[in-house]
Structure formats: structure tokens, C-alpha cells
Image 1 (cartoon, one colour):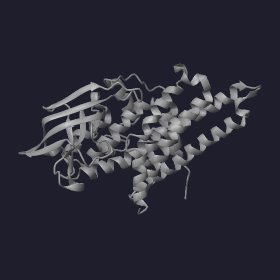
Image 2 (cartoon, helix red, strand yellow):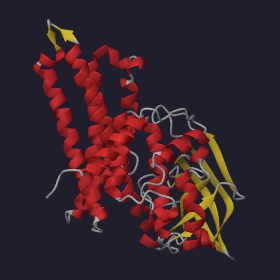
Image 3 (cartoon, helix red, strand yellow):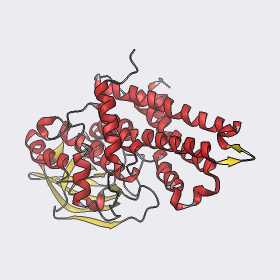
Length: 376
């Protein structure tokens, strides 16, 4: 069993970390300007896990995760990386794996280059974790479907050119009750709501999307009718592993800052680093980081090997998200009163970490998935 990265992987990790320091976070709640899209695309973040023939980098799950981790560790804004990850894992991957060949050819090059930005429209006002009860309906008509419903907390919603969304096509179909669609922003009957005012991941715009008799042609169905759950679950395997590499990078960055701080800061006539409770706290932070990293890399390896990654993905998502929150809070304790000052950025790190235990399936959902994989 080899735990080491190749020379090429280490070099790519170092390169993206250096480049990420210059990655602008000048997006707003309303959108992602073209120059930021180009920067994200130039670093490979929008098309990392897409084959080269479609405009991507051709990476597998592990190399894609390393790219996101390296960018985060290098200092890229967490919300901006989240915007790129939501685009790639929740939207581009479903188009790649489930769209018709002509639809892939039409959409993927623009999605990889940043010409097109995608929004993940799954969550509804009354359907977050319970994706089996979507109120949005898709009614079969000649040549396609009419969508009616409201999606909330749509990542990249205000800025998106394309939405990957899900609607009920057979209320009595059980697992096969929903269907996935790729919908153009300019489709008649699609209305994009105002940006949400958020306190975390602020560089990723989010908002409501409303469908009113919105026509979607048959060639924009992802997979077959009734395969919405399959499309969503497949995308979540990528999102719950690769996207959460962002939080490995965040923890790496925070630990570096804390180590530097405790070496320089003195209290009671000693360096903070020489106080055992402080050293113990940092040891726990390192333990959480490396434990989560091993689980996440294993989950990515299972995806790359074509195995069922469900157990490893759930454990990785749970471990990394909970560690991100705990480590951000520990950083706040280490920095003391300075942690609440915006100039130090610790309070922003906490705000960006807290949602990690909610989006992409809550921690309780991950525990349920782990229990199910154990045969309980």
C-alpha cells in the first residue's frame, strides 16, 4: 500500500498553491465576473475531472482533489473554491456522465473554459436532505417537459448560465420518481431570484430559481427519465470527496498560521508553543487533518478504481467537515481576542467552515449512510 504522492502530483500541488495566492476573490453576492471565471478555468478548477477531448484536464478523483486542496492550502478564498467545486462536481460531472453525446459536445467546452457557469438546483424550501420528496414537477409534453417549482440555496444561482436541476416525474415511482435536467438560464419560464445575503462562503453567490411552465427539451434530460436519484447520488460521490479537499487545505493553512503564532506570541513569560495545553490543541488539530485526509484520499481512490465508494465517501465527508469546524474554532482559541478582529481573518475561517457539516448532506445523513453500509 503506497501512501506517497508521485513527483508530478507534488509538483502540481505546489504550483497550484503558489498560483492560488494571486487568485482574486473579487466576486460578489450577485455573480462571478468573467475575469474570475477565467482565473478559475486557467488553474484547471472548472474542468479538472473532465476528459481533455471535452476541454478539461482529464484528471481522476484523487488528482482533482489534490488540485482543490492545494489551491485552498495556498490561500484561495474558500467561498470561491466552493463556487468552482459546486460547478464542477454537482453540474459538470452529471452532464459528462449522463447527457446525450451532442449535449456534452455543446456544453462541456464552455463549462470547462468558464464561458458557461453552472448552478446546482436541487434544494427546495421543504426538501433539503430529503431529496425523495421534491415539490418541483416535470410534466411530459411533446418534445420535452414543462418544469414547475422553486429551488432554493442554488449555489452559483445568480451567476449561472446553466442549471442542473431535479424534478418529480412520477410521484409514485419511489427511487425512480425524479428526473435530472440541464436547463439554460434564458429558458422562458425560468426566473432567477435576488442573491441571498450570506455570512459564509460569500464569494459563492446563491439564490432562488423559479420554474413556471419552463420547457426543457428531451435532449437536456440527464440520463433516462426516472434516473434523477442515480444522477444526484453519482454527483454527490464526487462532491462529498473532491470538494471537501477544500477543507483539508483550509485546515492545513490554519495549522500553519497557528504554529507560527504560538512560536511568536508570549504569555506568562513563555512562548505559547511551550504551554502544554496549547501544544496539545495543535496536536489534535493535526490528528484531525491527517485522519480526514487519509479517508478522503481513500474515497477518491475507490472512485478512480471503479469500486463502490459509498462507505468511504460518507466517512470522509463526515470526518473532514467536522474537523474543519473543530479546527477553525481551535484556531480562534489559540488566537484569543485577536480571533474576532477581521484583520486576522480567523472569524471568516470559522464562518466558512460551519456550513461544511450541512451542505452535501448533513453529518447526521452521513452517519445514516455509514450505518446502512455496515448492514444496520
